[in-house]
Image (cartoon, rainbow, N blue to C red; front, side):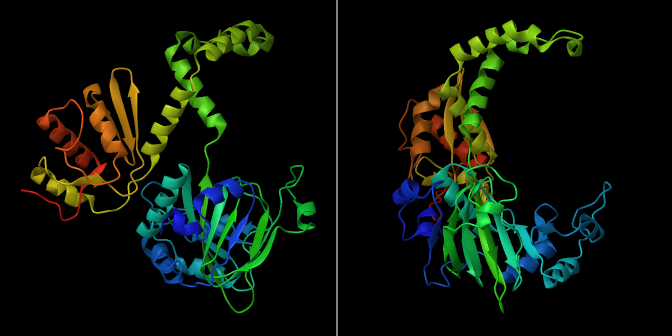
Length: 398
């Protein structure tokens, strides 16, 4: 399952032009097994029993009201209060809450390799951060009252069905959203297995199960970077370079009027205006993002074992889901990718650019650049060891 298959039959160019952060989208497929292999109700017990899940990775809610914290604490779902307290959580508490109408919300991208791979495929398409939450709602129940999220959501209905209502954002912010609920919904439909519902950030919505059947859906939450993130990174780069920003404020700071700092503030802002560079902010944001991602579980120990067997003619490729970014910082290169961040010599720039851009298998011998054969082999072995590359399966030499 990748992003293109997730939104089929809508193609990505149309999706981004017409729907992304503009309008909700319901795709009805009449294909109950469309998401087979992603997750199922039978997985939930296993993750609760063996996944070391604790709040907030597990939440229980009914009509917008969470299960009391003392219940979670007494049953072990809040985790140990004292160091070394590793008592097992009692899954019976979750089962009882579910019987009483509570929706079980379980964050699963760290529990399921299949869901992690799905999230990464969407991150590859969007370049924004994803989390995945599984919602198991009993029949004739509603987990959350009408609300609006500060992130975009892709709802994948796995089993059962839910009636969803999605409304246009209110003209004025309103925590109660009462006037929204009184209006006409943009979407009012029953979402069934295999269907997809996209809800942009800020669009109020609610969902409830109907009679006779529970519902299981997977929600992919997209937490987009904001322009403020780019501005922050660009300004942070300036403050690290210009000593004036690191100077101390005067003593007895609390006794001074804020107006006393106005001229100095204008001077510093002037320096920011002259020196702030969007390219530097973007570079820092990209490096931090790539480095923050978790690598996928793809048998990397086998690649570590294969290091002594790698030759100039061993076929290599980027590991699945390797979103990476190469940047120059002062007199070296920085390469960031899921789970790692490396400092590398400038002499390897052309070779590294080729590796980062590669969409097909390659060999160390075939790589361009000024490095000699020994240098190219050393470089690819380091990248295999660090987790960016792996040996193409069935392509071992030596």
